[in-house]
Image (cartoon, rainbow, N blue to C red; front, side):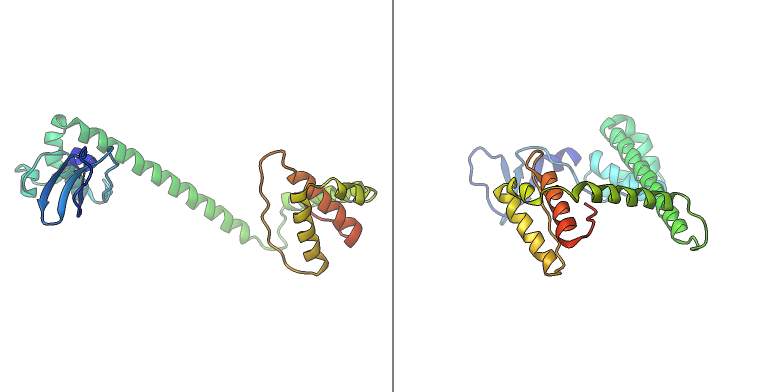
Length: 219
């Protein structure tokens, strides 16, 4: 069934192109060969917690059958039935291994995410008077950087910088500075390839904010 499902599709309209392989199944129902093999999507059971359903799905996909009763092959369960025929259907064995690998990968990811969330919760639960050595240090360094920015841009000729802006840069610059003058909240996304002048635009805005508004912009 796996090989069949990846190569054929059931459609309601008759294929019009003459080079398409298809078979009529009934009124307004046709079996059409796909242009290329597709990935078969199906419900993937957990091999440990849903063992019988897991192996049942593998047998349905890879073992030839006419009725599902044949899949057990006189065994007590589908896991046992799969173990008796897996040597004759190596594709099912390979598929089984891939499903197990994917399942284990998801479990590892979930564990890492849970550990990360627990770590964040432990940080958020720290009392205000408890020492957090790294945070004040980082804040101090950021403040120093802002002070250095402040001293660097204070004596730059703003008019000269603005005159170097290209048309697109100028339009964005005017839009942002107008909003800042009027005290408006502005959310704006500026994108562009490397070398289009995004960094220079930020530099110009930082100078303008310092010289016109007497503020330090953390840009």
